[in-house]
Image (cartoon, rainbow, N blue to C red; front, side):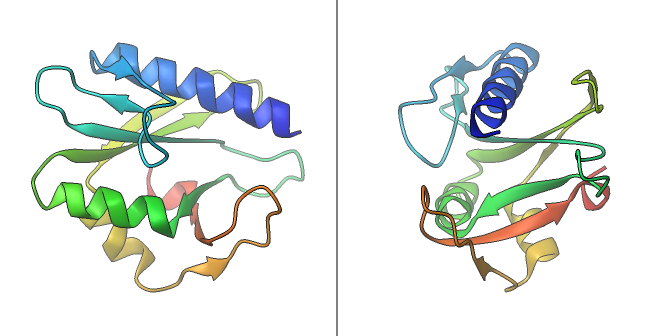
Length: 132
């Protein structure tokens, strides 16, 4: 499952880089995946399927520490989230950019402990229907 999520994430990052003429720099920092080479604007890419294997609606996993860094950068007008919505078969349904400040309005202060062994921190699971 983890490998599939990594492949999905890499696909979404490359898609966003191509769509917005960005450099894909997944190992440059842990709070963004792509950079506009002309302006330095950072993009954090999130992806999910419309419907998960369990039958539940898709949701984007946001991390509080990443969001904080994006929000600080957004204060200088140099950051975006890019959300990629996929069908159950992995086809691109839609892509939407959203300013971190707008995401802050949606999330409010509702961050929760993740409980993941591979990543410590607080998260927010943003339902896909709140983005699209």
